[in-house]
Structures are given as C-alpha cells and as structure tokens.
Amino acid sequence: MDPVEQPPGGDWSSCSYRTHEAGAPSEPSATVTVEELEAPLPPTLSFLGESAGVLPRGAGANLLCVAPLSGVEFQLRQGEEELLVPRSSSSPDSISFHLNAVALGNGGLYTCRYRLRAKQTWSSNSAPAELLLSDETLPAPELSAHPATLRPAPGTLVQLRCRAPRAGLRFALVREDAKRRVLRVLSPAGTEATFELPHVSVVDSANYSCVYVDTAPPFKGSAPSAHLELRVDGSPPRPRLWPLSSGVVVPGRDAVLRCDSQVPSVMPTVIFELLRADEEEPSTKLWSSHASADLVLTYVGPQHAGNYSCRYRLWSPKPFVSELSDPVELQVAGS
Image (cartoon, helix red, strand yellow):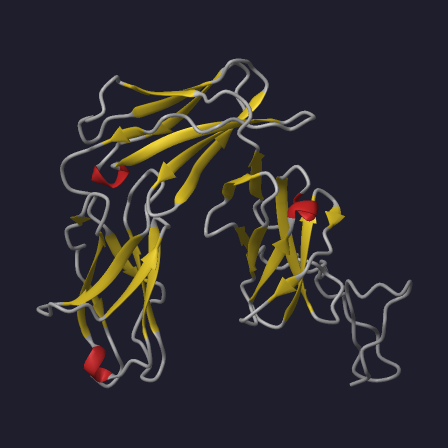
C-alpha cells in the first residue's frame, strides 16, 4: 500500500489511499475537524480564603492564586493590565502576590491566570477577588434585620439591610467571627443594600456589620455600622457524603470523599470530619470556610474498607455539631 499523501490544497481534513501505483484512489475518508485546544481550567484567587476583603487605606494585602496543576507560571491582573508585584510560593501549584499600599491604589477587582512554562496559551482568568479600601471618614451606615427579630426561626429568609446617607456607593456585609469576613458586596441603585440569608440555621448565628465605599474620587469609605447580633436555634443542615471516584479503590491510592454541608448561605470556618462506622474518632478532618470539603484517606489498603459518614462542627461563637450524613461504602480491592 502506498503511503498516505496530503490531498490537493494542503488540507489534512480528509485523506485517501490506493493499493498500488496504477490503482484508482479510494473514496475520501470522513472529514475530521481539527480544533484549537481550549484554554486550561481557571485558577482560584482569594484574600484570606475569601473572594472579597475590606482594608484600611494604607494597608497591604496578599492574594493567593491556586492552579489545578503544578509547575506553572502565574500572572496577577487588574482589568487587562498585568500587575508586577512581589510574589512568593511554598507550593508548586500556588503563589502569593504581595500588594503594598502603592500597588493597591484604590482597590478594585483582581484576577489571576497561569500557563505551563514555555507554553503560549494562558488559562482563563480566575473569578475576581475584590478589595475595598476604607479610610473610615464617612458616616457609618445603619444595619437592620427583616423580619425585625434577632432570633429568627430556622428556615426563615432573613434580609440584612445596610443604609447609607446617599446613593452611588459599594456596600459590603461583614461577618464578625474569629476574623472579619466579607460575605457579599453589592452596588445598589439607591441608598440601601439588601443582603439575603436564605433558610437560616444555627450556622448563621453571628455578629454582622456593614460598610460602604465611594467608587469615585477621592475614594473615601465609611466607618463600620453598629454590630447586629443574629441568633438562630436548632440544628444545622444534615450533610451529604459521596466519593469523588466510582468503583473499587486500588490499594496504595488515595480515596477522596466530599462532604457537603448543604448550607445555602456563607459558611463560618468549621471542622469537617469523616467517621468510619462504629468508630468515635474521625478517620480524617479538615478546617474549611467553604460549604463542602474533600476528605482524603491516604494510601488506602483493605483495612480501610467499610462504611463512612461525615459531619461538621463549630466551637464558637455558638457551638454546634451536625448530624451524621447517610453512610457511603468504601470498597478496596483485596478486602
């Protein structure tokens, strides 16, 4: 059989063959479409583990960019501009960008991206992280709860309304736990921003405040509002557990099980625990401020086979522990 030849016109979208020199060519093959590879999956960018933060003017900030693979080159961006700032890394899949007061300027939205070294294609941009700067020179806003009770029934939709003296401002709702965490940022058309906490539970029990900043020069910001203490009784939502890979686990591999709190609002920092049936001590646990956590059993063997459940707990300000999830069976080859 003769070698395959490039068709006339230099297009490799189809090909043909013949069995000997004098033979007639075959019918062309089916057309094959050659597409450009998609951009790599986006990284994540965060400030102290959150997607937004409020800083006093003159302070610095560290933004952490994490890629889904190792050995990559990172870039921090604001809009279409690359920010050339000091950086450091203790892990091959992440980098910390260090922004001083000059680099921060007036704050705003930041993204990061990455590419494999010596490659041309950048990943998609991360979801933005936002830094709001406040010099606390503007009057403090007023924060109120609707329904107008500080002990709402579990499952209620609670609105926290932050009112400022004028319109055209950017508002942030802050949860006052062990650290101040920005839960959400809004830019309403009027003088009031409405932050919703759907289906509240004991997880939402905390002190809340709000601030606002002016997005136009000279970019001033307010003092925080008075604290509003929200207390919800009852138990937190029951979590759900499932394995991230199906089938039997090969001995020597890691087994990863995801525990989802099923909390609709923003989580405080809790401890997720994975427990084997009939055992009191967790097989593994993980601190997280996200609604779910990936719990890893490393280097599994036949001794790890069995049924597992998960739960999550918080020690303060209002301690709670969830019920156990429904059990999931972990199957290990050779068990």
